Image (cartoon, rainbow, N blue to C red; front, top):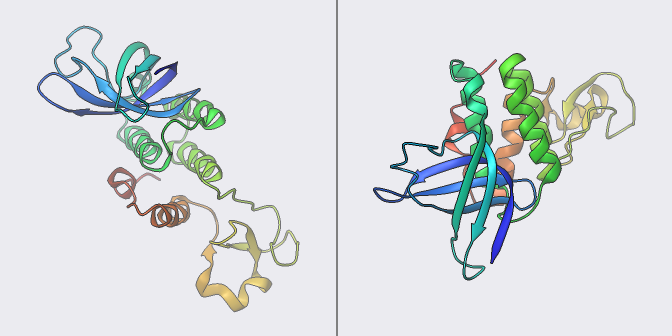
Length: 217
C-alpha cells in the first residue's frame, strides 16, 4: 500500500539510535504515522517538526506502521523560532491534531487553515491567530461554535453565554436557569480548552500536555 501527498511534519519521536516515528498531517490523507529511517542521525536535510514537504507512506499491509519517504520543501518554524509564544501555539496545535484526528481521514479545509495559521503566527497576534485555529479545529471535531444568535429565543442581544452541549450562544435571559452549566463569553482559550477536554473525554483520552501548558495572551 502506498499513499502520497503534501504534508506538515507535526511530530517526531526517536525510535532507536537512528530512526524516528514521525507523524505527518497531509492534505489528502489526514494524519499519517510511520517510521522515518535515519531521522535521528541525519546531518543533511534533517527532518524537523514544522517542515512542509512531500511525503510518501509505504506499508505491505494496511494495518502496519509503514515507512515514510520525506522531502522537505520549507521550514515554517524558521520565522517564529525566536518567539516563545508562537512556538508554544504551534506545538499545542500539532499535539491536538495528532491526538484527536483519526488517522488516514482527510481534513482538507483544516489542513489549509493550519498552513494559514502557521504563516500568521509570524506577523499577527499569536493568541488571536491560535484561537481562530482552535475554533476551526472544534468545527471539524463536531463543535461548530455559533455566536450569532441565542439558541433559546433567536435574539442577537446580550449574548454572554455559550452552551457546552450545542456550542451555540445563549442570551442573559435564557441563560438564567442554567448559568451554572454554561460557559461565560467572550470566547477565549479557556473556553475552547473546555470544549477540547470534552472531546478528549469522549475519545477516552487526555488533553495533550502541550495544550495544558499553553499560556499565551
